[in-house]
Every structure is written in structure tokens, then in C-alpha cells.
Length: 160
Image 1 (cartoon, rainbow, N blue to C red):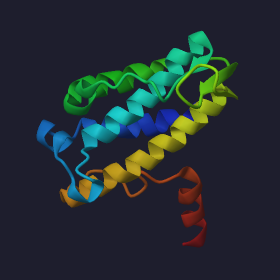
Image 2 (cartoon, one colour; image 1 turned 180 degrees about the vertical axis):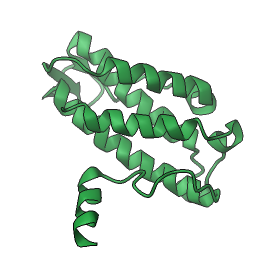
Image 3 (cartoon, one colour; image 1 turned 90 degrees about the vertical axis):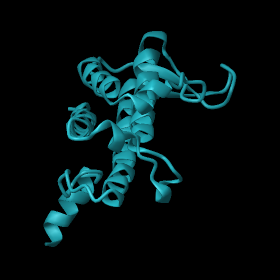
């Protein structure tokens, strides 16, 4: 089903958050431009929230999203939001507009399912960056596949 990949990525992130301390979640990582695991987690949550909010209105606006800095610093709030979203993403497909610039007249036509696919790929990208942060902190608390696209995992299994 279309939701499997995104659900899997969100569950991987939720599992990771349950293993981190608040200090680790908030630690600024130099090689990531002083971003933290919390910053990447916030970004994943906020973009998915745009899609879930946009489902009702038929308009997704990633550009003018609400940025909730509490998600970046509060590990428990972020974990709660992720677990809530897992229960909300399964919806029937429908056409939606995605705002492309400031202003409601600049948009592309998309679909809810297409934006779910985008958010799954987006989450994988940020999980890969989170894995860099984990390595920087010498935390070996995820599997080797964390932050890796399913297609890459399948390919690597074939070439081994």
C-alpha cells in the first residue's frame, strides 16, 4: 500500500527517539551546519503536517508552514506527534493543489498519494542526515538500513 513506506520511516524515527536523551536530541552537529536531530525531526513532522492539513482544504502549502520550534527541542512532543501522524495518514486519494510560491495563485496540481510518496522520500533523506549526527556522537543505535531508501536496500541485497 502507498502508506507503508512512510509509516515505516516514521516508526524508525519514533523508535530512535525512544533511545535518545534530550541532550542527544538537541546536540548541534557541526558537519550538519549545526543542525540537531531535533531540527531534522521537526522538519519531517512539519512537512507531513502540511499534507495532512491540506487534505481537508485541498491545498498544501509547504512554503508558509507553521514552524514549531518546540518540536525541535522537546523530544517527547516530537515522538507524540509522529505517533499521532501514523494514525492519520491513511486516507483515500484525491487531487490537491501544492503552493509553489508565496500566494495562492502559484500552484501545481498533485494528489494526496503523490505527496505521501514525496514525504516518504523526504523522510528518508532526513533520516540519512540524522544517521550522520548519530555517527558524529558515536551512537550506534540504529540498523544499517536506517536512512536508506528501500530500493537501495533491495539493490544492495542483490549485489552481495
